[in-house]
Length: 167
Image: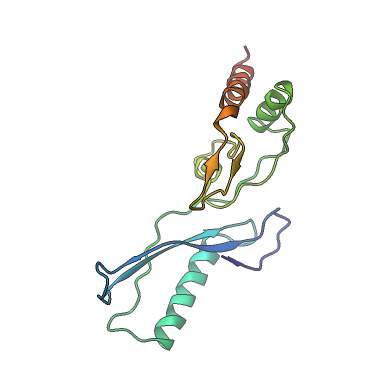
C-alpha cells in the first residue's frame, strides 16, 4: 500500500493498494501475462482522474524501464467518489443511536477504500459501512469474527431501520 499526497482535510489520505495479481499456470512456467488489480482511495483533493493518471504514469515508467514484447494495458474497472457522512447525518445517526441503546460504545470513522458507502454515494444514496461483530485479523489468512455478538448486531440494525422508517 502506498499513501499518496493530496491533503484536503479528508480524514484519510489517498492510498494505492495492490489487491490481487494472477499469472502463470504451472510450477516451472514463466507466465506470458500477469494481471494486477489496483485500488486507489480517492479524496476530495485526489479524484478519479488523478488516480488514473498516477497508475498510467507509473505503468509507462515501468514499461520504459523493463520493456516487454507489448506495452502494459490499463483497464479502468470502476470509479467511486470519496464519501463521508457526518455523525449527525442519516443513516449514520440511526446506527450510532441504536448501538448506544443496545449498550455498545461505538464511534464513527471513515471506512477504507472500496466500501459500499462509496458505491452507493456514486448513485446519490447515503450509506454506512463497517458496523458488525468484533473481529480479528481483518482481510488476512487468519481472519475471524466473534459470532456470539451477532444477535446484538442484528438488533442494532433492526432498531436503526425501524427508527429510520419512523416506527
